Length: 205
Ligand SMILES: [Mn+2]
Image 1 (cartoon, rainbow, N blue to C red):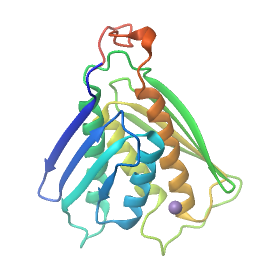
Image 2 (cartoon, rainbow, N blue to C red):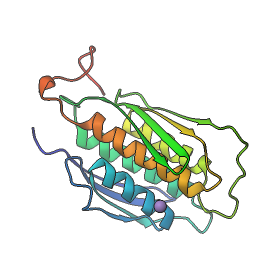
Image 3 (cartoon, rainbow, N blue to C red):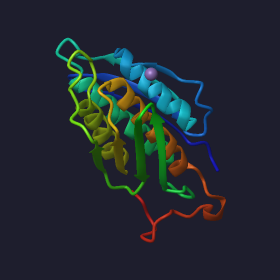
């Protein structure tokens, strides 16, 4: 198996973002500088628990407006760099599912590196959630980030949040951890599948 690394640089009128990834990393060799402190924390723990070595730098952004474009574009770049590092996807497990609890909140992520971009966030809650208006991040930003990621990577990703907290940090952190764990599984090489693209179609593009 060759090295599974990727380098992406994306420039638009709104943002300029660079990323470098080694899928077969250790998770503790990451440098995340998005300019959004909360998102740095989320991406760092996603990479740590996924055992990915990731460098991500937002060189230019328009956060003077808000974090909408930057949040979306980081998701796009992250998806692109994974897609690049996985190359033709030969030998990978393709599917992964994992859960992460945080206090009463449980996040579950199910992923299929299918080549088709689709994302769904399911929220299962007994009580109505109060929107954390004072907080800079939200579940709708999480949804937008993961949707951008799934589409640019070409994966089907479903996240379910149970017992959602009124603390955005708790909900989003559990979700990022679960996605890191599930993506680690899905990107692992199964020795029984050596050199075989895990699809009955023969390709995953
Ligand atoms: Mn935290």
